[in-house]
Image: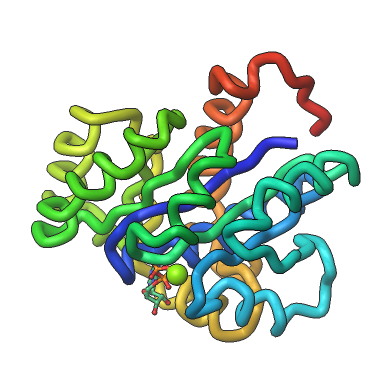
Amino acid sequence: MKVLTIANRKGGAGKSTCAAHLAVEAVKLGIKTILIDMDPQKTLEGWWQKRSEENPYLIEASAPDLENVIEKLRNNNFDLCIIDTPGDASINALSGMKVADLIVIPSKPTAPDLTAIGRTISMVEESKISYVFVITQGIIRAKATLQAASVLSQFGAVAPAVISNRTSYATAMGIGSSAVETDKQAAEEISQVWEFIKSRLFESPKSSKKKLTA
Ligand SMILES: Nc1ncnc2c1ncn2[C@@H]1O[C@H](COP(=O)(O)OP(=O)(O)O)[C@@H](O)[C@H]1O
Ligand SMILES: [Mg+2]
């Protein structure tokens, strides 16, 4: 089982939206996926509760419990665990990063978000886990999106596709679904982002000894 943790110290970066959409994409490709929502605001869990399908599954875990919960999941034939974290450097965020094989940092391509990204990078680097960036809520064909990719790529790999600003994402989060089901362009970008993350997840040093099952 691989553990993918979504982190950014800034609220509204698109963490929970990313977690939900990547999970549904993984499930679509036959990957047995479980979610853990470490954010006390429980955006991801709220989305999940509105769903009728059980895969992705969801399990509750507190910060002190998290390592044990992950160990149990490893023995329960899950292929992927996606952990959503709060937009801070609390024990919940840090414990979510500690158990990860790969950390995904979603970031908006705006000046305030890029200015604040250094705090997230420092926090993630302390965990010594590999990380990648995904630009979210990008305005299609806007210069700012290209500039953000160039800024972020100085620190780490950036997903080759941008998760654009689309009402379909916000709508999907409100009804427990995925934008991929109704929006072809969202489907295309999520598929590309997932392919990129999937390849990184299976190449990360911590996971190199483990065998991919999906
Ligand atoms: N790609 C997107 N397009 C449009 N709205 C988005 C997108 N990603 C996130 N949002 C909206 O922005 C807000 C914050 O997103 P969220 O995923 O909850 O961020 P975080 O978990 O980092 O705080 C939510 O209202 C969400 O619906
Ligand atoms: Mg969130």
